[in-house]
Amino acid sequence: MVRPVIELHTSRFSKVIDFAFRYALLLCSISIIAIIALFFYELTTRSHLTIARFGLKFFSTETWDPVSGDFGALPFIFGTLVSSLLALIMAVPLAVGVAVFVTEMCPHGLRGIISFTVELLAAIPSVIYGLWGIFVLAPLLHRTVEPWLGQYFFWTGLFSGPMYGVGMLAAGIILAIMIIPIIASITREVLVAVPQNQREAALALGATRWEMVRIAVLRNARVGIAGAIILGLGRAIGETMAVTMLIGNRPEISRSLFAPGYTMASVIANEFSEATDDLYLSALVEVGLVLLIVTVIVNVLARLLVWSITSGHSARSNA
Image 1 (cartoon, rainbow, N blue to C red):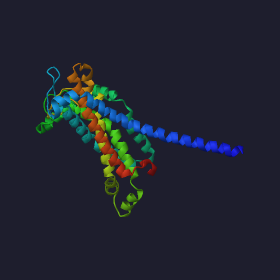
Image 2: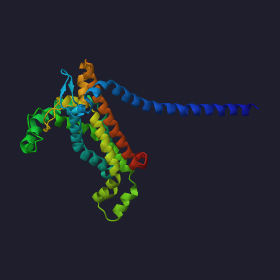
Image 3: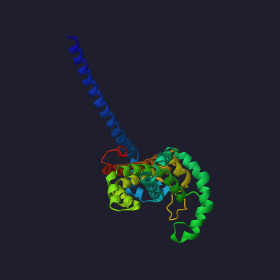
Image 4: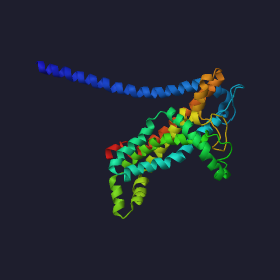
């Protein structure tokens, strides 16, 4: 009689544990959603002064004058978009090329080394990128790259004016280096998820290695690669320290990539501690609200695109 009683108590105890475990995980999931909602609530509440005073003009005005109480976020939106898009232009070909080489052409002995080296770039703190940019990249741009671009491509209007070394071009380059491991790693996952029989079928039909990669691999993985690019864009949009150290921090809109600029993350980092006026503080918080909305939208789109190509399964399981 003792054994059935013990088994009954064990069964009840297991049910209690399963019930508690299930709802503990549910609570953890809900808490994440609650944190995001709290972010939106706090940022919206604390930016009500500028929302009420400037409305949509806040996004279309170039003036940023804390002394006179006139605030417009257009230079920061412009600087964020230009530096991020410039980073994508430079990073995407290199990152996709690295991913294709590692998955399709790299010798097995080098595959792990190259993958680890690329992913190691993501572990370097952004302030280290900023210091490297100040002491290595900016002098190189000032002495060599920018004079050459100004001499041969001045007619475009993108490479004209004073050459400081720091500016939109320097910020775009450092961002490109920082988002390469993100795009390359996710692209590699997506490429590995492409069924092997697609490759074999293309080769069996007489396709060359390049044709096989272009038709059987890249075409099937294009949605996931687009998701990886958008995730890299989200990383570039939200980067703060390295960009702050290299972009020049001047709220202006200029066609030249040599000119200094400003980003939404940089202005918050630079001026938040100096914002003693309520309206000034509200303007910075509204900039943060815009940055949060853009980042969430970009990351949601990227996750949906990646999921659509991998069907919710890790690409590592197909490696």
